[in-house]
Amino acid sequence: MISTQKVMMLIRRELWENRSLWIAPLVISGVILFAAAFGGIHFGQGDAPWYGHNAPETLNNFDAGQDKRGAIYGTAMATLTAIQLMVLGVVVFFYLLDSLLTERKDRSILFWKSLPISDTEVVASKALTGLVVAPLYVLAVSAVTQLLFGIVWFLRMGHTFPANLLVAFDGATWLQVQAACLALVPTVVMWYLPIAAYLLLVSVWARKNAFLWAILPWLALEMIEGLLMQSHHIVDFLGRRFGGVFLVMDLRNARTEAPELGEFLRHLGNVYVSGEMWLGVLAAAGIFFAVVRIRRYRDDS
Amino acid sequence: MTAIIEARGLTKRYGDTPVLRGINLDVQPGRIVGLIGPNGAGKTTAIKAILGLTAFDGELKVLGRDPRTERNELMNEVCFIADVAVLPRWMKVSQALDFVAGVHPRFDRKRAEEFLARTDIRPDKRVRQLSKGMVTQLHLALILAIDAKLLVLDEPTLGLDLLFRRSFYDTLLNDYFDKERTILVTTHQVEEIENILTDVIFIQHGNIALDAPTETLGERFLQLVPAPDKVEAARALKPFHQREIFGRVAMLYDGRSAAELAPLGETRTPSVADLFVAMMQPAGTAQKEAA
Picture 1 (cartoon, one colour):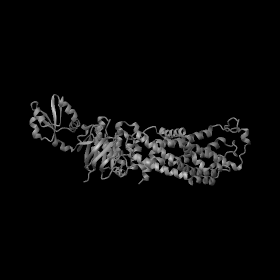
Picture 2: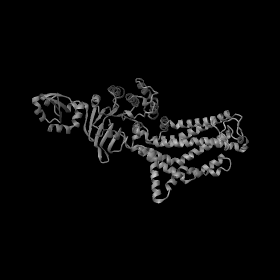
Picture 3: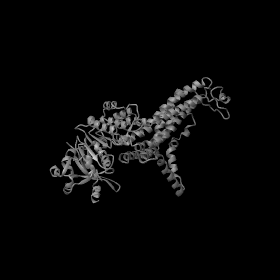
Picture 4: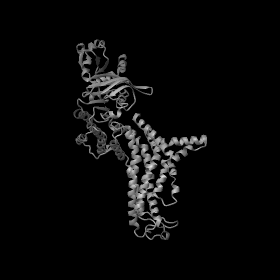
């Protein structure tokens, strides 16, 4: 019943309307590259920032060791992607929260509904844009940024930089970082599905102030719980939903050695065997269904 | 031929307030039907029901389909313009064409482009940069290029100046309408469209007050301005509405023949606007008579 061609068109339409989805990652990349080109580098406590000439004493004396270079490069590159993904989380949060509200606020829903597009296709296109297209795009931008970072780093530091600390490019490690991110992002998205579905639900239901509607009920519940029962199950529940995926992965125990792709993937696997994630996916499916029904039948526009 | 719209006992309530009180409708193919009523009469609700945008009780078939359960299939063959301000303001003209081409199997992009070429609308403009009249032209261009069986227009020219309103309906007649197609239009500006309507439906307080082909209105309704000495005789024939114009009384009759009325004064066929005003204000008339 869902037409792929229509959903693709709807996703294009989402990117036309929500330009922040594809501009924000480019801006962040720009900032990262700018910082790489002109920023000062603190190395060791008490040293003045270092700008690429006359490496400070501590730096020259530092030896990361042969086998750690790849690990340091990998961590640095993964950090660049992590920054992008954190910002993406915020952008997608607000994107989903607004996606089904703005069309009612500006009444354009009457235009969308005058065309042969089903509510399932519309809601699916919004979820796919926020949860699949935007993350994949960010990963691609981030991968390219890392390569540009290497070029900037090389041009700036040239031969003055101690190559035993941070190499400009390490092909094998770079590939491993990309592979790890490609595996990580879908896993995290699966874990966050119920949150995404909840945001869509608030979006399709609220008349305005979607942000407040998304936040206030939980705050109120938490306060009532705190007052009546002196407990904090609601905060615990929310904390688990937002941060739990990383606890389930149990990555801290992987840090003992240099990160290695196979081990990372095994840790990701923890998420897929946790009932918690699948319960969330089930809840999300139910909420998505409700969102489609509400968009289909509400008529206050 | 089967009816394009067929309603039996179409009912809609908002809480305790009935908006549609069990209306019956039959709209045949190749007609231009005006759905006319005062604010709050139920026009827009009826249209929303027809388009599957609201829940309702009773029976309703549009192109043989139930809008409640078969909306997705229905919208392949039905177009509508809700009013002028619903095109998304961020959209570029070219994007609007891309989008409709991407989702509508019956959209002929070339036709829409040809129509736009006759206007001042450039493809790289955003909707928010266009005047209200141009937005309507754009919407019309999109609709004209869709091969649909039923076009529903809800106050399509609200807030437009006379030139745009006139050209809107001219375009609709010349470039869109044919015997295969049906247009259902609601508007306040009855005078402007009464010449193009083939049928009129008056709706008041959620009921159908009149449902007739325009060409039969002349046979059924007559307006009489009686000679001063014939006023009492004219009243005796029970006009359903009367009003004073320049010291003389214009009376409207339902079902009286011209032979009956002509001896009493000047007769003529009332306009749709005259009929509308008369039928929507029976209470006001009664007051006037009492005073």
